[in-house]
Length: 305
Ligand SMILES: [Zn+2]
Image (cartoon, rainbow, N blue to C red; front, top):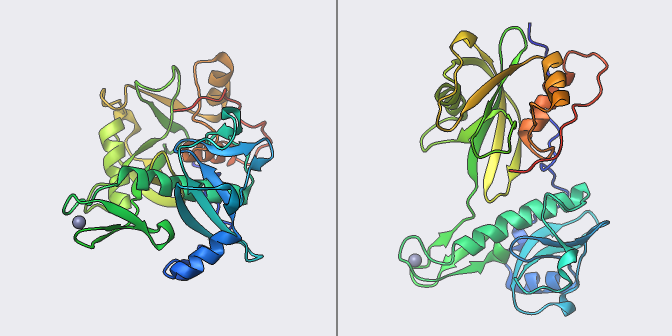
């Protein structure tokens, strides 16, 4: 029997400590006065200005040029902005990738929102309707075409990710060729146009591992701003485990694991788990703890990608 898991998952990047205050975006004068008293995080297109205590917030007097994106206000009414400029305002060692920076929950929310927005702005300088230039508007919440006036909204690409188990509570993981050696993870893929999440789950698992799943349950979601995904997580039961095989293209190997074998493989170095920030890792950890026995946490060397 499969052990019931504790959902929804508490996912590391799914944090939002700010009120996004969308009603404040449309008034330019109000945005200016918010900017004048804001705490401002700096993103250089890749990294955040930060140190071991977290994001280093700047005041508007320290900044010129660049793009400003209004992120929201905290409980005390303090506004927060992201300043997006590729000019370095501090030595290189004071800039850290989102996944490397030491951030509290409020700052994770700021960084995930800010990075998602900044990467979208950077990739959408032109109107997809007429090809003319677009310009940031509403505090960075949209881009407006300077010729045909159309508004373009930030993209978020939904992707499903699924923890698949058989009736004996073994999990099935797959491996992509491009990953670090021995890395295995849960199955995932982008939702296609006109497709529901559940249908995407069934399709992806069938395509990648040749098995059919049922009993699909929603277990949580988190943004994955590398650059624009939203991971929607599910668990599902495999009907026909005997049919499991990799598709040989996206997935080059698969592995069945129970709780003893996952520990043994991690110990012997024949298995590497996805990074702690990922939904995949959170689901694997939640499954591992779900039998209710006292267990040490799964220990896997950090590996990105
Ligand atoms: Zn246009």
